[in-house]
Length: 225
Image 1 (cartoon, rainbow, N blue to C red):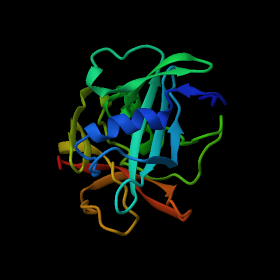
Image 2: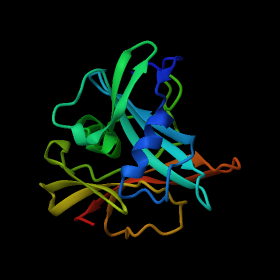
Image 3: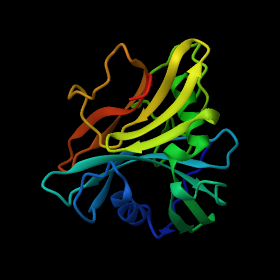
Image 4: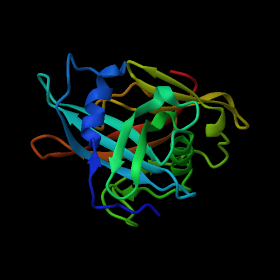
């Protein structure tokens, strides 16, 4: 169970993301973003070592606001071989130095996201300790799906981040965990056909004017994009 500490981080999360987002191929802005927190949820690490947060931040620097989904992990030491996935480091007021990583490239987060899609993990409130978040809806993957995070290959592209998990015992083709980066409202069309989708995670976020909106944060689908 993750404990949410009421303390400071220096630099803060939004500061780290403001420097990191423009380096991503799926970032749609033309310059430095102007970010505000807009929603999200957490998952617990069964080992109690890695913090996991599925953040939504809204960029209002352009002609229209853009909501980005940024899953991140917080670690007490560097993750071996993951230098390219490092968002930055920050001093936590209680835990000390934390290494902040792009969660789509952290095997602990990928494994727990798969566990969520299999009904084996419970989404947690973003800002409260030991509090499930019932607003996160999960279209669970088939019970026999055997994809594992250990064999994942991550591909960051202009449409988001694809985590290719490889062939499984019950699927002839590879399966891909598609992490949505630019969030779209439900029903707006997202390029995934019902026949392709094996499972999905849907959650909510707030628009700058305060309206609550929902959309898919991640999709498990057959084959590569």
